Length: 593
Image (cartoon, rainbow, N blue to C red):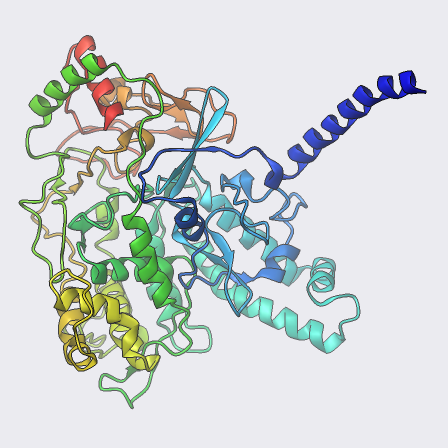
């Protein structure tokens, strides 16, 4: 018996191991932990956990609806933890949601936070590396489109709705309860379907890209500022056809301008709050201002708003703690030192360096970096988005912070940048009044009144008296459309951590830094997008298995007729004439930043 038991034990162990492997393959939550890149002593597991699931105020749909939905292939959205779209496993999510998704407190609603789009994972030699604050490698358009298709079928196909209702309500629900659920889903679906139908480009954004500016404009001006009951102004929604690469976050709080064309002021926590409010409106935050003549300008902005102001302010603190990721592999120091000399010679003092001397002087600003907005001959598509106008809806006649909107005088509508400005600024100004809590912004005001210090000797009366002055002055010129005489130019971000941000240029049209050092005509005309990484050429590996996605670029480089396709690989000619040894040295230096 002992001999037989000894023989059976290894067999049982093999069977158990095989079962565990099968379970791991079927259940993404049991997959191996990735390695985490070194991002500084101030970025701890506790901060990471909070960053992955911090509520900002996004409200997509009730979680039980989402769990009951079936994708077009018959699977549920959470069967694979949403990894098919590139979203990353979050072992701390009790609901099985990926990084950047959470269950909103109290409402039990599926919510989205900024880490969904700003957390990256790359694969090198079979090892996965997680980079917090990095540009996500996700296919958000297919995620949006699959929700649209799935809910469409629930609304319009009787058997599908019956199965959906059974999962949401249980098998003993009454006919009245089922009818009410159908009406709720139908009401939810109407604006969502309009947004997806009118916004999503048929050619697709591609993995790792999103036309976020268009989607924010479309949400606010197209779905939020119309009259009740549906709040829709369909003609304000334009095709979101200028996708850009997600930016990295490790310098977001301290650069003096933000957004790729640099139209949004930045550089203090109040402006950071504004940046984040706009982001929430773009990812399903509830915002339905309405006419109310009890207010000075006749508009009530925050009735039913889902903005989580404390969460948004906490987010700004968190991303300040994310440092650029350190290169995880060997660096040839001698070669990198030679590369630094080449970099300094080629780029000089006006490109990507950290420059505090020439930064804009903001109210409450502490330490900021100048973000030069430069025309380097790249794609101009996003500038077309900034020209869009729209009907002003219930905001017509508002007084602050722009000149009053007047639809009778401006038949074509108001600049959508101005509409967004009003929505964001008024939401921030009204929040303490709406929520009857001036202390909501106490940390921001205290820091401003103490010239950057957070000492506690500012009285409550001083906070109240200075509220409108400090907040209003910071937000007075929040968004500024570039002047017509300004050529299409984009922000030159710092190079720290640039190795982890492929593909390159604002529109993600160049797969590696080695390719960026080639003449535009010699850069890849197409390339696969995914997490597999090439650490020799610094960027996306040629072969990818995660997605079946190929990015096809264009190369119309005529400076008098700039490419507006959104996909041009032209421009940024710095370093393209270097010798091969100099390019190799330059790449080695960029790895070390």
